[in-house]
Image (tube, rainbow, N blue to C red; front, side, top):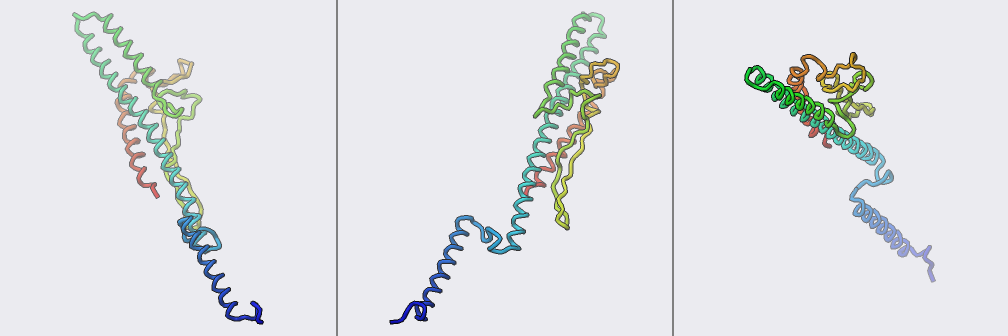
Length: 219
C-alpha cells in the first residue's frame, strides 16, 4: 500500500491544486480590489509607483479645493466691489443733481449719507469663510493673503507647493483701525470713490486667473 508521500501522482495532483488555489486567491483579490497590484507582494516596484500616484492625486484634489475656495473668496470681494461701484455711480448722480439750484440740497445730502452707509454695509458683508478682504485693520491684520496654487513633484521626488500671493492692502474699503489719523481705508480717503472704480477690474482679473487654474490641477 503506497502512502501520499511516495505516490508521485498524488503529489503532482496536490501541487496542481495548490497552484489553482493560489491563482484563485490572486484573482479574487484583484476582483475585490479592482487592482492588479494591490500590495507590495504583487509587484514592489509598481506598488511603490501606484502608492505615490495615489498620494499625489489626493494632494491635487486638495489643491483644487483650495483654488475653489480662493476663487470664491475673490468672487465675494469682486461682487461687493462691483456693487460698491454702482453705489458710487449713484453718489455721483446725486452730486450732479445737487448743482441744480432748484433742488433741496438737504434731501440730496440725506440721500448721499444713506448711500455712504450702504457702502459700509457692502464692505462689512463681503465675508466668505471668515475672510473679508474689503474690511480689515490695515495696522494689525495680515494683508498679504496666500492661496494654494499648485502641487508639483520634482524629478528627484521632492514635493513642492506653490502659492498665489494676493496683496489686499490696496482694496480695503473700510479700515477698522480705531485711530482716525492712521485710518487709510479707501472710503476714508479723499479720492476713495475714484479708487473703487480703479481696483474693481483688478479683482476681476484675479478671479479670472484663479478660475483659469481650476481645470489645470485635475489629475
